[in-house]
Amino acid sequence: MKLYNYFRSSASYRVRIALNYKEVDFEYIPVHLLNDGGEQHKDDYKIKNPMSQVPTLEVNDSTQISQSMAIFEFLDQLFPDRPLIPKDPVKGAYIRQLCELINSGTQPLNNLHVLQVLKEKFGFTDEQKAEWAAYFHRRGLSAFEKMIESKAGEFCHGDDITAADMFLVPHLFAANRFGVPAEEFPLLKKIADNCQGIPEFAQAHPFCQPDTPEELRQK
Ligand SMILES: N[C@@H](CCC(=O)N[C@@H](CS)C(=O)NCC(=O)O)C(=O)O
Image 1 (cartoon, rainbow, N blue to C red):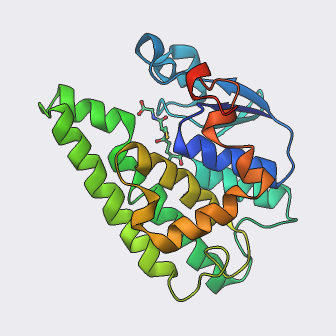
Image 2 (cartoon, rainbow, N blue to C red):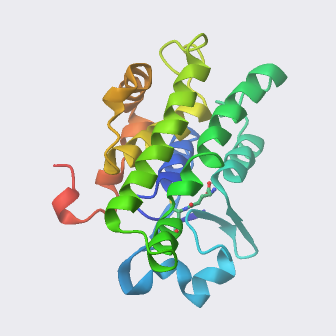
């Protein structure tokens, strides 16, 4: 499989963790979101992903899957061992709800394209853009923390690693870039620290990918 992705993209980071967790070998194809107006907007990439976003998982010449949630469900169906989303309906709904809180309720508001449109079409200053992004990051992460309070253990779902942890860790990384440090959410920070000790998470970190710029690369 080929994963079209970008080192710093939180949705790409989610999928890298899941692929590592399922022990799937994949070819890393970088798509630079800023260079040359953004490689995600090039015609040859838009054939694979008409939304001009990463990640896209290419399974073969005729199967390209975008949307990290769809990729997670696909991986669980193809490789049922080590489920990302529990099969139990109630537990499964709890994990999907946490993933969607990030995937549809928080991350899209801070997406690169949204922030570019706010500036270019609606006249936001860089300061207003940063304020907007921080507001929505805080709103989502506060709700996420509330939602897991009574169920968390080492991870979001007791002591089991699930998709919720794989959505949370990249999102905290993204929020930090917008001036919202994980320290504001002690329970989330604890879980993220636990996750970072797991090789499948650590190997997916943005600072050790093939397209990580030299100045950010973890030594
Ligand atoms: N819901 C999508 C989100 C994909 C997404 O927003 N990707 C961002 C990077 S994290 C992107 O490609 N942005 C490019 C742009 O905004 O131009 C998923 O889960 O895959």
